[in-house]
Length: 262
Image (cartoon, rainbow, N blue to C red; front, side, top):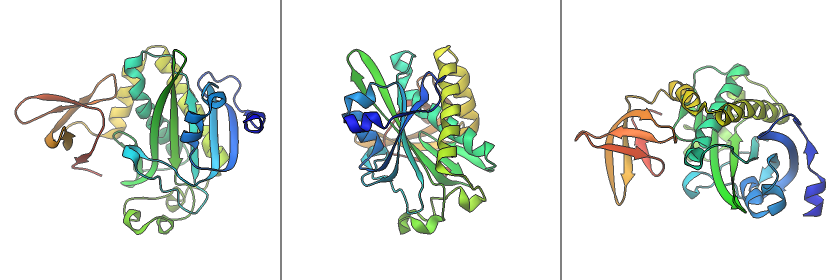
């Protein structure tokens, strides 16, 4: 651990939440898991951990994160959020919005967000987010894991993903991983500062406009069965507000679901 700690370098000293310092590793099992299991790392607010290669990256619902073979970005931000606990789940949406703003600034077009944690270019996934939380003492810490497909083409991924995934390079965007990481840190810092000032509703309004999800049909897991309805809003906690044909209102936060759009 001493060796890891000594390899942490300053990044943006003026940042309060995202990218104050950086730890780069050639290889680890998962940047999220490393942060969660290592007290000296998870206690370091604003640290971002990135690895050239993950051997056991994790995605949403326990799925394996497919990193590809072209040097794509995988990183985890250690965030000590200064917002009410009830709003912590919305950090996944904050991260998605920061990625969308980053890749759009780099020249990506036809960008959108798919709730809760995918960023799309041309209707295909270019980035995914997994936020996990843990208490250290009385403080809640969020580890925001981010993967972005940077280089190469969709042929580097498993055959089951090739029609669903894309890379920035496929859309003519050439960027190195360090530059991409730094811009994501800037965008995420800006959003988290705004959230700490009470602008959560405004931020989620931006997210909702980019997600284009209002009025879309959705089918979602509800206990041991599935329910369906139409998305009416995104609430302050980042949950989908879904109205069923019966008029019943559901607040959907996670789980298996299908949309009528990709």
